Length: 468
Image (cartoon, rainbow, N blue to C red; front, side, top):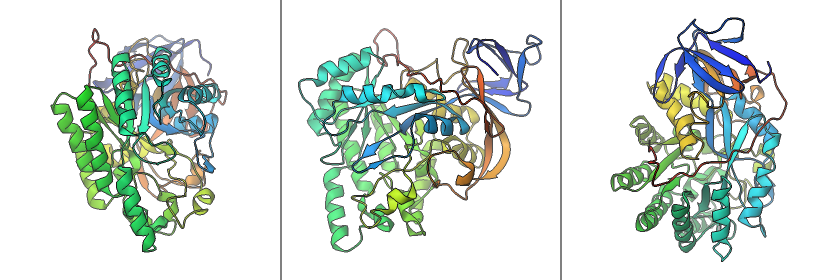
């Protein structure tokens, strides 16, 4: 299948974030040309048979770390591997993080990561990252937004590496507010974590199996409260990554009630897995920040997702392998944090929430595709099936049953945190830019055609932003 011509996705049920009905999708020159009545499309075109299946916009993963270096460790994947895994899981756009390495400016980090986009089999966008305020930051922020990088990440933890102080957070938020961008925050209170970790180390409980004890829920909840106070003070939008506690989500909900443009991202592993994994044979494989929480916390987080209080679901894909994690299994303060997940994000979420809990498929599309596209300035080019949108399409078999097995996956690691999990629902066919790239478990087009996406400003007074 080549791009540039016409193609018809025929016989399926189209599902977007706002509409669902039987329809055929006409693709022309790599974009959506029309949604048409079933069976009324032009004859003689190449066709994708979607009978009995769901036809959805390709997923947009708002939280990926590709080729990420932290200390002595670099994740195992590059853009080709990460995006190939993404499309196998129904994700056709990833949003990566340009996190500065020691001695590197935020602008240099953006240029480094942006240059890799062409290695991908699907498109990508970027979050910039600021760790310290200096006199060059205002100009860098203006340049980012003008050049289509409208979100900037900051961390409230990892002292001496990526941690930003409150003054930096306030200044970046204020400048982004005026530029039409948005701050993206990893919230864990560093002083609480350092104190708890010191106590754990003193008692000999600082290894991978104790990880959940070293980063308590209180640390996340306290940091969210502080960042929300800053956002409210300067009337700036804020997006919280990987919120893992019900109390953190509740704070964001209350802030929205006060008129603050605040948004919650959850990630699949916090919604499905719990801290019992740290008692299993390979606890190091589940070391991530924030850590996996108690079963009760996971249940309550799921309740909030079902209630519509979670805006987006990302993967927080960070593709280390077991050997890297084993090197410092004895001390979580020094081992690499993060889980591989770009390929399993959508299948696991669909199975656990749409199939098992009755989440409407339109809400699934909203959280995994449309809302991430909106909150990253990519909508409706991405995350929609509107005429003119990129023809990134996923044909989804809602009845397919399989068991997650890393040997069947395509991420550049030797395990998945979901190994052994039975899932219902799977990708059947994936189109990227009108080309069929995945069909029945095979990557049909290995040509790197990825583009760096320039995002649009999020907050312009003359164009009301449709919050989710």
